[in-house]
Every structure is written in structure tokens, then in C-alpha cells.
Length: 312
Image (cartoon, rainbow, N blue to C red; front, side, top):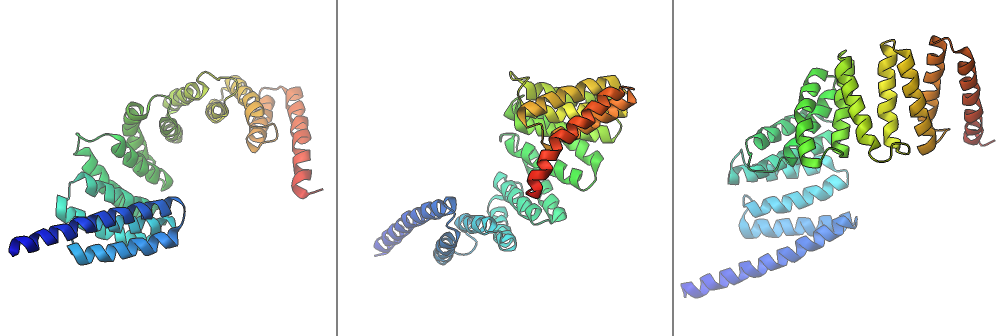
């Protein structure tokens, strides 16, 4: 009799597992399609059923909590999402231990939720917990580690802790290059940030090296028609200007302007910014005719834009 009951229980659990798998597929489909209210209803129901079947601390409950939290986060209900992921984190820690790779991922997600909610201190707390775990799991891929490194670096940058940010970006750049490649957008962003930090700390030679590297990365095989070249050219020109190297700055601004007009537009805000910088440089170099011509050009380009904006 006991064997019969045991077999029946196994069958019920197996059938329940199949039903939950189908529900999870439906939940993820609704989520991808933006049908959040339907997804919430189904996910909340699935969570309640699993809690009744397996108990509130079973690791399978964490999966349901994550699904529901994911939907709430997409709806902008970050407090609700944070509560669900915090509970999932507790279950994962109890099941796997505090240094487990999945625990790190839960911390990373919670960091993102708090960051999106503007709670920078809480976000950094969870990011640093995740970073500590990722650093102690060398058998895992480096993608997660470098993601959390750059997130903490960005938080430090945004909150004015530039020295900390600098160290973190320096640590992340070799990993980014290894993981994503030498021409990746992720590496380009980190290089740009680190160059800005070097600039801020007066490390002009280091900043120049990185700006030049950023230009090389952006140019690729399309040196003359790549809008990504404009920003590092402009920043390198600014660097030369602040050092009093006006002739070099002029050449860089002119190159940036040609590229900007060709790829972004002559009436774009960036083109106007570069043009105004050139007026300043021409005057500092005593090239009054060029300065006057550039001022006339700025007026000719900006006037139609002003009329368009005012609806005249």
C-alpha cells in the first residue's frame, strides 16, 4: 500500500512539474510581449501553487519569485520587485551558501533594481556583494565580474568618488578587452570614462593615450564616415586646448567638425559646439579672418534651425 501511495505522489509531482513548465513558458511569452498584467496574474498563481506543494523555502520557489519580480520591475514597481528578489536571495543563500554563483546573480539583480530606483547606496552594497563572489569563482566566465565592476565604477563616477572609479575602470578594461574584444562598445565606454577621470586628475598624458585609443577604435575601417570618431576627437582637442597647444587643438577640432557635418549634420548641437570652440581657437592663434568666417557660418547654419523650432 505504501509503495502505491509513494508512486502516486511521484506521479502527481511529475504532472505538476509539467504543468509548471508550461505556465513558465506562458509567463515568459507574456513578458516578452509586454502583457504584464496577465503575466503577473499567472506568475502569482504559480507561486502560490508551488508554495503549497513544496513549501515556502524550497529552491523552486526562488524561480517563481524571480519571474514575478522580473515582471514587477518591467512595470516600474521596483519596491515590490526588490521584496521578491530579496526573498529569493534568502532562499538561495540558505540552499547553496552565501558564496554561491547564483547568490551573486541575485545580488547583481537587486543592485540593478535599487540603482534604477535611485537608491545608490543600496545598489552599491549589493553590487559589491556580487563582485566579491564573482572574484572567488574563477571557474566561471568573466562576463559577470566585469559587468559588476563597471557598474560600481559608474556609481563611483556619478557620486564624485573619482579615485575609486579610476581604479575600478583600470581593473575592468583588460577584462572587457578579453571578454568582448578590442573594438567592443563596452570597452570603448570604459576607455572614455577612464580618460575623463585621468583628465579630471590632471593626468593629461594618460588621458591623451586613451583618447587616441578611442579614436583608433572608432575609426576602424571607416575613418572618414564614422560618427563615433567625433566624441574622442573633440575631447582630445579640448585636452590640447587646456594645455595651450592651440595648433594641435585646431587641427583636431577641424577634423572633428568635418566628420560631424558629414555623419551627424552641420546643424547638429555637436557641430555647433565644435564650431564655437574653433572660433575661440582661431582668435587665440590670431586668425581673425577664420574666426569671423566661422561665426558667419554658425549664424547661417543656426538661423534656419531657430526658425524651424519657432515654427515661423
